[in-house]
Length: 168
Image (cartoon, rainbow, N blue to C red; front, side, top):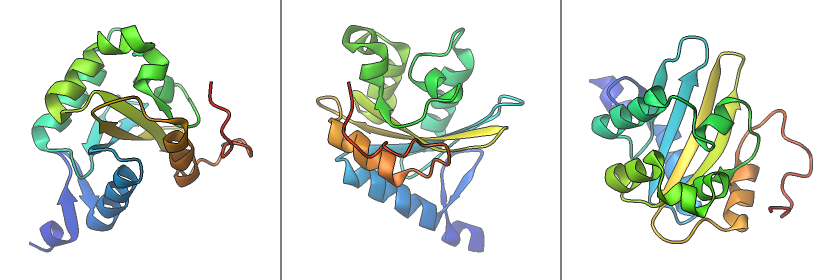
């Protein structure tokens, strides 16, 4: 079927066009990540789509379950849902000890084989948030990787000096 040849199956509920999957894979490679997912959340009704080159149906379902079952949003994903601008990592948002003991860290290790996660807001409307998640095993992503992802993101409300290395 033509749809299968022109798109990459991103999850059990959503298709990502092949050209978008190629861009996401390129961003993954730019920061030496080994996993890439795009998380899209409908803020009005709570629907969640998980797409991307590394989003098989089981991983997509597990990520959706993590976001839905959280009684309180974790400081990483939750921060993006409430409007964080700019790239950051889960370890920076949770703190080192909080990250390594979090349910999200366990999910990343088990489902994606990574222990570090970088998030980049990739667009937002009044109803939907799109978040690029990049993962790798090893040390936390350096400031340079966050700066590269900030420059790659299309954020209409991004402050003009976001490209500089002013990370804490």
